[in-house]
Image 1 (cartoon, rainbow, N blue to C red):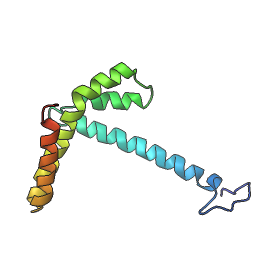
Image 2: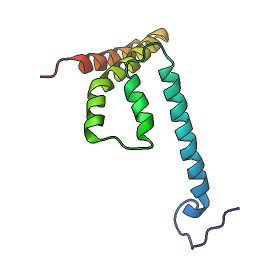
Image 3: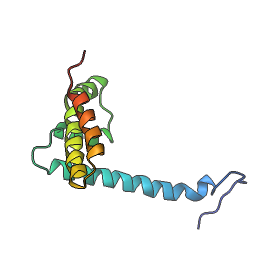
Length: 115
């Protein structure tokens, strides 16, 4: 049992009482992110494999600004396109054509040439 050592007048439990819970949640998020990255990388030809792999490594050691910028510039839009294509297909499959159309327009904006 965790007991607060200072008077607490705020809303909700004192920080000392929730600190172990927060730490467990953070650990769970890290594990979930690692599993999600592994799942993504196990897919057929993931378009942003280098970015996802690097992002996992960046949790332990931050990248240089140039490294991060180059990788994000090259792989972030292909990652978004893959996300949008997946969701467009899922939305159409459940007859959510209006929302699928919005995702399609978002996709077109991402692929439009920069002025």
